[in-house]
Amino acid sequence: MVLKVRPKSFGPVFVFFNGGAQLSYAYGDTDDITPHPPHETPVDTMIASLGSCIIRSVEWAAAQRKSQLNPFTVKIVGTKSPELPGRLEKAEITIIGDVVDDEVMATRILKQAKAICTVSNSLNTEVEINIQAA
Image (cartoon, rainbow, N blue to C red; front, side, top):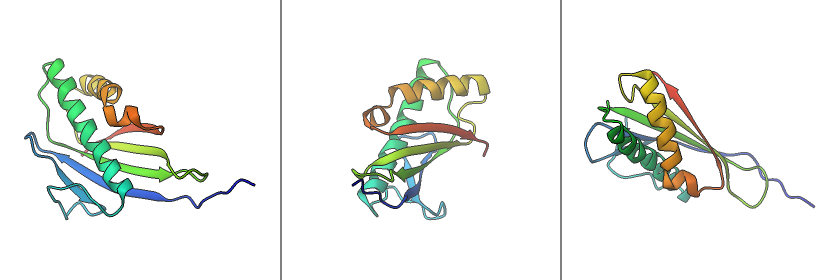
């Protein structure tokens, strides 16, 4: 007998990059920004870590390519697997804003960032990255 669990989403969690070393976070409502990741559930904290890792990886990739970053936001939504064991089946990351002014360079930076993000590479989960204009 295969047990199935109800589909569930986690988030959205938002991570904000403003050009400085400190990241900011919001859970669900982007008007309620804090300097700390959400802790409603361990999964929300985990997807906040995924967003932070993507931002730090974008910073590193942009520096490698000598590109100046613009402020941007990362939105992460996790979808729980409908089958046991309990895990995330998918993590959807949306980059909101223009990471850099050159769209082609932004795509290259994001591809490189996804490849080097330790958190996404450690998950046994499909990780998808999309870009959305601000």
